[in-house]
Length: 321
Ligand code: SAM
Ligand code: SF4
Image (cartoon, rainbow, N blue to C red; front, side, top):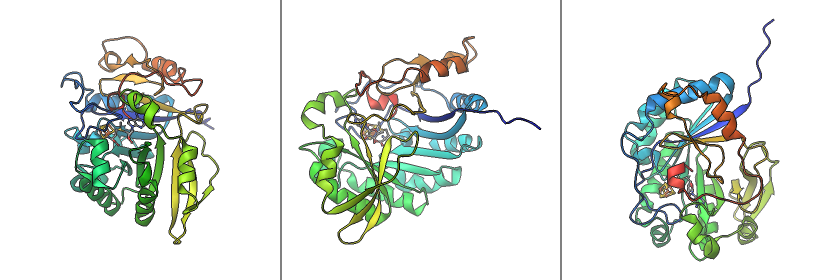
């Protein structure tokens, strides 16, 4: 009898570009950031090789493509098809959905399982204040295309900010429930450009809870190991039901069983969003370094934060949210 080999679970977040169509205030300055040059961006072959090498030693349950905006990377459908060949159980993508209306069906056909979509506001004025773009209609069209293409469950992400979009939490939740999407309320993080807004605009999860009641009844689900979200069954007073989640990196601790590992668009491996330590793995993938990729991965996984504090000056667009 052949003994089955135990493999630790791993969840990968791979940033495929630091470019984006939007300029969300907590993520990028109005003028954008100095983007990586063509030669600095990790290639599709390197990404596939990286995932395949990790599959040898780890149970890679999830790969999430992110950025910047992953739909801003030329050939993203081709990359999804390449990764799909590796048989990853959960192949997902996080996007602002600005380009999703025309890309949802091809992405699904290439093997993408599901999408998370940022939706911080529905009112055009609030959306523009956050993203510096008057294109909320494009995001809503992208959400509808994702549902139509069956990229489900479609999850929506809303970063709640005091004095900016907090007045929309009930409307965005109603929008999500009516479409059968799972809305996740995110706490603003003091990462990169988010640090400048943090003191004035941070809203803790417990405040969002208070804003939702009594219009919505929330019943918590048991926490899923390794998950960053606390999920709730939601029932609105008009009877509409669904699921919502709260991601509370500042007011709660969910790090003890975190199995996430991040690869930036320039090929840096990062074990924790809250820590600046990273390791350039491209020389290993290109055969120019004899350092072991798996040893570097173990080191990265060993550097998770131990408190609720952040020390991260790099923007989310560069790391990959
Ligand atoms: N462009 C895609 C998007 O916006 O969904 C993917 C990349 S974005 C960096 C991933 C997620 O990070 C988004 O949901 C965004 O709202 C979130 N994010 C970026 N900066 C943040 C910050 N300082 N605090 C909390 N969430 C942040
Ligand atoms: Fe772009 Fe996403 Fe950053 Fe907004 S949060 S600027 S959509 S990368």
